[in-house]
Structures are given as structure tokens and as C-alpha cells.
Length: 149
Image (cartoon, rainbow, N blue to C red; front, side, top):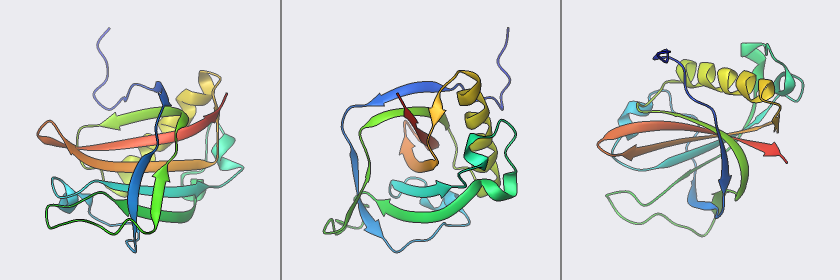
């Protein structure tokens, strides 16, 4: 069976060490393509508690509060790590796509991640980490969803 190009395989991931970022004042950027190849970004969102457990979440209500943004060292110099933010060590369901996705695209991917995670009997927590990076010559969008074990 050939995999559909819009499907993103769901992986169970045990992150053994946290990923540390310098907190930035960045809110959710509209166009992530401008970050491709420049720096690595981590964005964190609280999810609506009811929608985050639904097999068919209401797209407009899934995202709750924007929590933080963080970045790694850029080509222009070091970032200030006085206020670090983390992708904590722990258990996650994880998906990625090898391109810089816009908000509509990664939100669709997050909904599929949630559906697949619930179907596979994971217990996703109401938090979503969105990571943009440049890897192996192309931009990558990753979604991490903490799960209870």
C-alpha cells in the first residue's frame, strides 16, 4: 500500500533530554518560510481542554493560549539564554513534514496527529509544541504532543 503524500506517520517518541531555547518576544509568525535556514524556533500552545480530547475537534477552537516562543542561536550571533524555555524531556506523539508549513497546514496536521493518537489509545495532554528547523537541506515542521504514560 502506498502512503498518501498528505499523511504524516505518527511516532511515539521518548525525548530523553530537554531541548533548550532562548525565550523571544516573537508571537506566532504568519509566514514561517522566512525562518527556514536561519534559526530554529519552538512555539508552545495550550489547547482547549475539551477539544484536545475530541476525535473530531472543532478546528477554530482547538488552539488555546499562545504560551511562548523560543529560538536557538542564529547565524547573526548568540541569543540570550537568561530566560530559557524548554521542550521538556518526556513522552510525546510526534509528526513532521519536510517543509515550512503555514498555520492552516500545521493546524490540519495537529488535528490528524490528535485523531491518530487517540485512535492508538495515547492520552494526549492539552499542550502542543511546534518546532521549525532546517535539516538536511530543507525546512522541517515538527509537532510534539505530550502524552500520559
